[in-house]
Every structure is written in structure tokens, then in C-alpha cells.
Length: 451
Image (cartoon, rainbow, N blue to C red; front, side, top):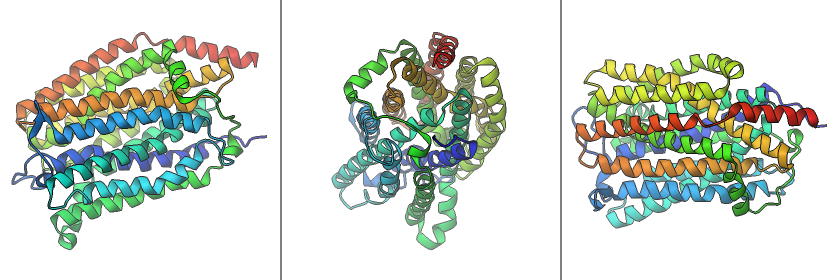
């Protein structure tokens, strides 16, 4: 008999999410900030590494950095189904998912550090190439870790209660990891007397990478996958499995809204440091305080979201979260100068962050569980990979749009990105009304009774 899945096990599993979210948070929140833009008296670190790479638009208003980020996300998205298929078909004696986590935790962390260290030669062309190659490797390693990791959400979530619980736990560790990534300039400031302006940032990145690596290794080494999960390798090849996944009508309805949501959210997250420093006139060292405030308020709402999801369903809450983010983006568009605007946005964003951080992956787990019960084939990895494939395409487009709109660096350009995020998020909310959660959960319950 397999060992019972407990909340303790799910919390240990959630530590891996903290690790990879810290790594991705450093890259998504600070690469654009340090590699583009211009410094000023209040924020002298803006664009600190910008002189090392090409800054001028190279195609219409598209910058090299924007294109590199976009291509990276597209490459990441394309590799998701391949890695998912590899993981679903894996016959390793230790399981289909954990071997990937053990192999990738260290190289994933090392490459993140290299992104802030190596593209600093005296040759701009060499730096451009290094940045491109390293970002491709970073996204590849992230996919190889995260795709098998995400598949475990459905497999460890053997009941509706566990699916909501594990989604809650990993959402918490995710936003904690993202929040700590915003502490980067503060940590660098503490180290500046020891390592200098640029060196302190690199050292801070290295410290965060080490913490993330340990967090990813703990569940990878602790969880004995075969003790808890009785899974059989899938026989379906990756491309055929991806096609099957997108043929699922409810999954498509979910993905349509999800990709639009991530487009809007990526615009907002990429521009957050700029919104706070350029529009609100806040020093970049306040970014961590504001993010910590947003995280703290969001975490306080987690128990309520967890309870409400079980009582009224995930769909109503997710739609509420969409509209909540619409309000946040509108406030950002209209904001003036002053620290109080930063706190208004932080508190307002906490509500949709709590909802949309927890529930969407639980929806994917529901769909994957229903498919397993209907077909007898467990393709959990491909369902999560297909979702990430779709939303990463949205993220890639958002990075191109953001760097193109804000190439001038004016206040108007940053406000424009906030308005684009508002409009697209509103569209995503309207699309999600077509998702039929009641039917999915009803079928799962009926099939389990029959089994």
C-alpha cells in the first residue's frame, strides 16, 4: 500500500516552489531594471549594466533586450511540452518527476547568477550573445525543473481537499519567493561597502541563488515519489499528448483566459519597479517594503480563499480576482507621486494575488484528474505544460510590448502599459465565464463512485 499524503508532505513539496520562484523573480523583476533605463539621483542603480549591451531599437521600436526576453519565453514555452512528454514517459526507478528535480536544482541556480555576471565583457556584441545564450539555458533549466514539479500538484493532490491545499501552499511559497526577490537592492546596499556598486548586486544575486537552491533540493531529496504515487509511464508521444490536451474543451476555455491574464500580469510585474520609481517617485529600496506589504496582506487572505473555494467554488473567486487586478491596473494608470500610491496599489493587489495565486493550478489539476479517470492514462505533466506553454507565449508578447512601449522612458509610456494591462485583464475575466467547473467536479465525483 502507498503511504498516505499528508499536509506535512505538501508543505515540504511547496518549498520547491519557493526556490524556483525566487530565481525567476530575480530575473523577471530586476533584469530589465538593471539592463535598461537610465540612472537618476534618487535611483542610481537603474540601468547599471545597460552600457554593456545594445540599447537602441533594432527593429521598429523593438529593443534587443525585449526581443531576447521574448524569444527566451517562446523557447521556454516550446520546450514545455517536450519536457512534459519526457517526464510523463519517464521509467526511472525513483519516479517520473523527482529525478528531474534532483538533477536541475543546482545548474538552474548557477545559470541565474551567470546572467548578472558574464555579459560584462568589454565587447557589446559578445555581451549580447552571452545574454541571449544564458537566458535560453536559464529558461530551459527552469522548464526541466518546473514542468515535472507542477505535474506533482495533480499527483499529490489525490483529493479535491488536497488539490486546494497544495495549491494554497505553493501559492504562499511562490509569493514569498517573489517578495524576497524584491529585497535584492536592499541586500546589495548592505554589501556595497564590501563589494562595490556592481559587485554588491552580483553578490546579492549569488546569495539568493544559494537560498533558492537549498529550497529546491529539500523536497527533491525528501520526497520518495514511488512511496506515495502509483503512476505508470504514459505511452503517448509528446506531440500527440499535447494535441489531446488542447482538444479538451474545458481546458481550452481555461487557457484562453489564463494566457490573457498572464499577458496583463507580466506587463504589470515587469513595470512594477518603474511604476514605483518613475510614476510614484519612490526610491527603489522601498520596492521590497511595498512588496512585503502586498505579500503579508495576501497571505492573511489565504485561509479565507481556501475556505471559500471549497464552499462556493473556484470559478466565482477567479472571476473576482480578474476584476480585482483590473482595479489595480487602473489605479496604477491614474496614480500620482507619493509613497501612499505605492501602498494603495500594494494593498489592492493583495486580494487578486491571493485568489489567482492559488486557484488556477487547482483548476488544471481538476481537469487532469477528470481526464485520468475517463481515459485511464495519467498525463498530468502535459496538462500543466500545455498551460505554461500558453501563458508563456502571453508573457513573451508582454515583454516585447513593454520594452517597445517604454523605449522612450517617459511617464506616459509607463502609464500606457498599465492601461493595456487593464483592458486585456478585463477581456480575460469575460472569457472565464465560459469555464464549467460544476460539470468537471460532478463528473469526477461520479467516476470515483463508480470506481
